[in-house]
Image (cartoon, rainbow, N blue to C red; front, side, top):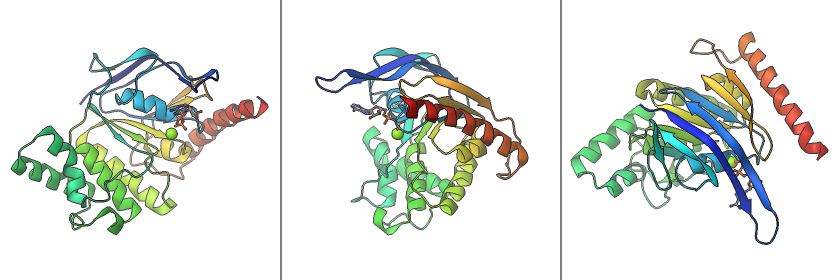
Length: 256
Ligand SMILES: Nc1ncnc2c1ncn2[C@@H]1O[C@H](COP(=O)(O)OP(=O)(O)O)[C@@H](O)[C@H]1O
Ligand SMILES: [Mg+2]
């Protein structure tokens, strides 16, 4: 289990001749060992950009990412990222999709098979191993992605709005399953979402980002016992506070 430290990350995109767009402005935070940290922010504020930098898929303009106090740059594989869009290979069956990363690492067949079986069991998709992605439901696909991410034993598991395109019932189920898996694996979680209910239900702590250029404008320690009750008055209080912060942020954007 690992801790993640993000130190003074800034990033701008340049769009050809036009002025550059500053997206991330001096972002710093830590995710403690085994902590479940969520990042909430308005659409387009730079959440995906931030995750890509943390996962070593993109270079920041300045700042550093440290895992267990070791600086990590482009191409490191210590953070597994569950993407916003479905990202399973359509031409591979479920088992092969999960096995893919291990295959690349060159792990021997027997060991690989055992690990993949364990993951299939853990995320609860037993019986679907030989199906192609188009033969399983959206929720099952997300579980397959969860298994594919966890099978490589990442130091940090990150999700980029992983549950956003699902119906409410499937989303609730996946949230509970994700928490169960987190409990069993003790992973360090960085969870990006724009869904306030989801963040309050799942997180130990929530960071709220501003519009671009994104900075951290609020932080909430969600010190409610688990398993949580979605409709509890304490949960509602947290939701109301966070929605207020986001509403003020949205109004600022509309006045620009
Ligand atoms: N490759 C890119 N080139 C130029 N601008 C980009 C690129 N990727 C994202 N952006 C812009 O950067 C901002 C942040 O994008 P993103 O990180 O995807 O935000 P979020 O995930 O919070 O919706 C947006 O305004 C977006 O249009
Ligand atoms: Mg995004």
